[in-house]
Each structure stands twice: as C-alpha cells, then as structure tokens.
Length: 282
Ligand code: PAF
Image 1 (cartoon, rainbow, N blue to C red):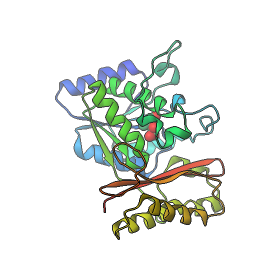
Image 2 (cartoon, rainbow, N blue to C red):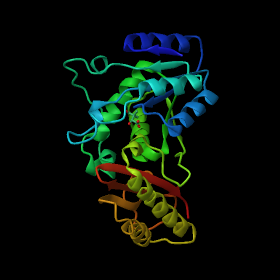
Image 3 (tube, protein in one colour):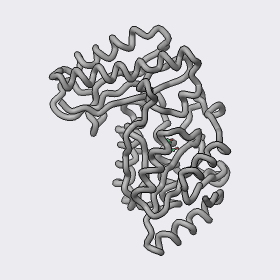
Image 4 (spheres, rainbow, N blue to C red):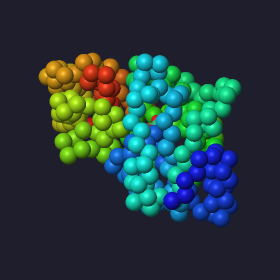
C-alpha cells in the first residue's frame, strides 16, 4: 500500500491511474476504522481496479464544543487494517496541507443541511461538504463510498456532486451492525460498559417502528410514538435530538406514510451523540 501525504502527489497519482483507464474507488474516512469502513473498502475493491482510502480528522466539521480533540486517532492500527484489505493507496494529509493559512472557501447545500442533524450541529455539514469536495477534486475517483448510517450526509453529498457537476458515482452501502444491532461507529469507543449496553435502544426503537410500518401503520405520529416509547425506557439516555419519520428525499418529517420512509434517531448517552436509521417501505 502506497501512503501519500501530499495533496499534489495524490492528485498526480490518481490522474495517472485514470489516464491508464483504470477505475478508482475512494473511501473517505476520519480513521478509527471498524468493520463498517472495511465493508466500504471491500465494496470498492469489488467494483474498481484501484482503491484509495483517506484518513483525515476534519476539524471543519466539529463544532466548538464537540469532540474534535478527543476523536479516536488510531493511525497505526488503521494502516494495518488497510494493508490486510490490500488497499492500494492511503491518503493521509496533514491539516496544514488541506487547510493552508488563509483557506476561506466553504461548500454548503442550502436547506437540506438545516434539517435533521443540521438543527443540532450548526455548520457540521458545511465542514463535511467542504472536505469531501476537496478530496473529490484531489482524487477524481470513479466512485466514492459512504455508509447509510450517515444518511443525511449521503443525501447532501449526492446533491453537492450533482449541483457542482463532479463526475463521480456516489455509492451508499448498508449500515454494519454489532451482534446486538448497535450500528458500528468510531464514537462507540466513547461508551462505558453500561452505556454500551444502553446504546442498543436505538436499534430496538428503529426495529419496532420498522415492523409497525411493515404491518400497516400509516401515521407518522403513531410510528414516532413507538420509537419514543422504546427510547424512554432507557434511563441512561440523556437526550433525544430527534426520533422520527422523514421523507428520504426532502428529509422533512412525514405526517403520512405513503411510500418509502426514513426512520431516524439522534440521541445522547452522556456526552456521546449516536445516530442510526432504517429505510422502510410499507
Ligand atoms: O463520514 C465521515 O467519516 C466523514 O464525515 C467524512 C465523509 C470522511 C468527511 O470527513
């Protein structure tokens, strides 16, 4: 595996691959890699001649009171995992090369960014889209891979690439779960033993809501109540940002379930914010 730290070199390397007519799959990450990330890598390897992964803990997407400084950084283990997966390139840029002094450009998708998590994490998606746009411009991949767990992020990235005419296919891969249903996330590492057990409440609430929709529930309010009832049983939850039924396209809450819907939860266990979702059709 080639490790590239300089954006200019990364740009030249991927341009060379593309000139040779080879397809390039790209998995952007912030490291602390788990099976969820590795499933994206495997999908990319299946679909492309070359697979590149980036590890960059992007300061722009963390709010001032969020967990940037304590975000897990496990680069040596990550490199080992990527070598085991036979990844071709690891792009590992330094912050000063991604955001040199005077960096002043941001990418924003209006309206959609303000729904769901956007209400609770102002500026977060601006940071995500700015770094993803920058990475896509440096690497020019044929396909880029993201997990469904960050559903709103995938909607925004699709919209951004369409609006900006970036020539890349965005592939969204299923959420990978622990044996008890908890969606894999680098932030799960923050959870103490009791919180880790409590975290499965998100999966239970989503599963019950999903079963209700499949069994014929058509009222958004009724399905929301099912999720809230399950979450309220968990004493360790310290806050629920949302637990609701959304349109998968507009990300608006839906009063009536007529077609495919997004069931999604963002909740807090102490200082750890967890998100999860399921897409379900009646
Ligand atoms: O999903 C993530 O890990 C990050 O938001 C991403 C896409 C790597 C951008 O920093």
